[in-house]
Amino acid sequence: QTVVITDYWNHRIMQWKNGDTTNGQVVAGGKGAGNGSHQLYAPTDVLIDKETDSLIICDQGNRRVVRWSRRSGTTQGEILIDNIDCFGLAMDEQRYLYVSDY
Image (cartoon, rainbow, N blue to C red; front, side):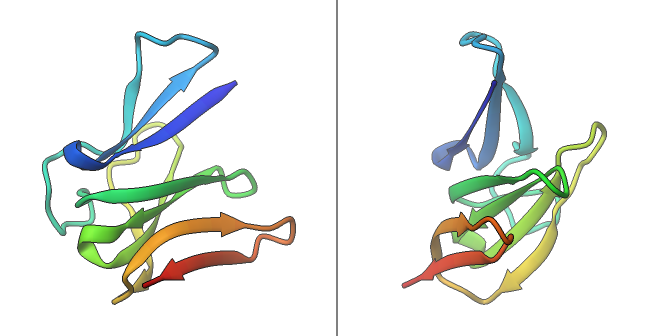
């Protein structure tokens, strides 16, 4: 089992696997706050897209939604939606993505 969370103040996404509560790893961002494709700025939500084996991240501070591959060696995200005041994400069984915009 995998737990993935946003670390808002550290501008990164963290992951813990198989009940290991002490050895979390950075799986997206973590290169300081910024707007580069390798950075996040105040992420507020994340979900796992199992079909593409990627994370969908609400990157609130950069006003964008990004996709970040979970494959080893991935160092940057791809912008899916730009210029949006996102806060939350959801995906249904047909993989329709819902984004809250405030």
